[in-house]
Each structure stands twice: as structure tokens, then as C-alpha cells.
Length: 213
Image (cartoon, rainbow, N blue to C red; front, side, top):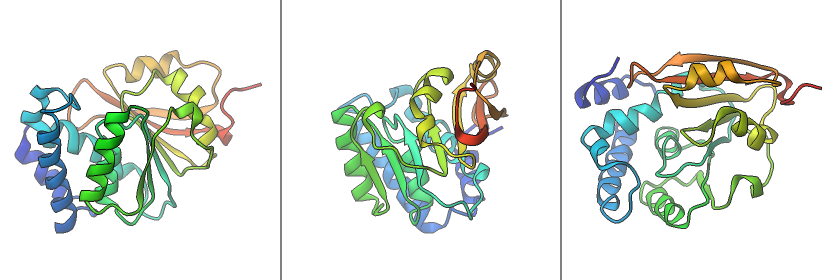
């Protein structure tokens, strides 16, 4: 379990994706986030004291669940302040990362951060998820976007039988998975590295078809 900022940065440096350039991009993201948070409430002010643990590592911990050879795009739903989308893009800049966000001020922030960090393969879809164009994705992530049942109903059209779902769910992870009905899936809960009471729902939809007949 990661408990402080030094441990968070040390853990990041141990990832194969985390070279000097990646750390530069993430450091810039932290600086921009801290400044922008004075203008709009992107994240809670209290969480900025542990920004590397609470937001950067909390996002980057999804990467070990995705094989490096996985073909992308990676779609991040309800990206908000850019977590995990901007972190994933910063650490895998060669990959297509699609961030879906409907709020105008968040869209503007994501674009500024994306450009400043030089993330040419990342793009922002500025619309409600229901209006986003369907396309198959290799990875789908969502951090505190919607309850699991609703999330699957909204986004299963982006999924194939090979799509990896990575859904940080906090303390509700196990309960939401236990309550899931009428979906064929191979999901399980992984322990979060940043919160002993939080979990991440990881797995695939069986056949990518969603609801059973």
C-alpha cells in the first residue's frame, strides 16, 4: 500500500512506462492542476496535498492491468479533471487515448493540458457519452463516473470480447459487482494501491454483448 508522496513517486518510477519524459509530463500536469484548481474545482483542495498518491498513482495503477502489446484506443469515460485519462496519455504518449467529457470548462482544461504536455495522440470528445460515436476500444476506464449497472448500459457499445474494463470504484467496488445482474462478464475486484478500503473492478464483458437474452 502506498501511503505518502515519496512512495508514490518511487512506485511510478518503477513502471516500465515511466521514463524521464513521462515524469516531466506528469510534473507539468501537477503544476497545471494546482494552478487551475484555484479557478475551478477540478479536485478537492485537500487532495492536492497528496496529489501524486491520490490522483497520479491512483490513475497510473491501472497500467499494469493492460499488456503493453494491447492495441488501443483506450477510452476514458467522464474524464473530468483528467484522471485517469491524462495520466495514461502522459505515460503512453504513443497510444490513442480518448477522453469523453461533457462539461465545457473541463473540456477547455483538458485541451490546455493535452497541448501543454505534447500529447498528440490523445483527444477529447466533448459531448455526453450517449452522443459519442461508437467505436471498438481495447480498454475502457471510468473513475467515479456512474454506478456499474448504468455505466455498462451506457458504454457496452464500445466493448468487444477482448476489451479490458478498468473501473476504480472506491469502497463500493465489491458491492456494485455483487449487485450486478443480467450481464455476462468476467469481472473481479483488485485492491487499490492508494486506499486500503478501495477497489478496482477489472475484467471483460463476455462476448462484448452486455445483457443476456
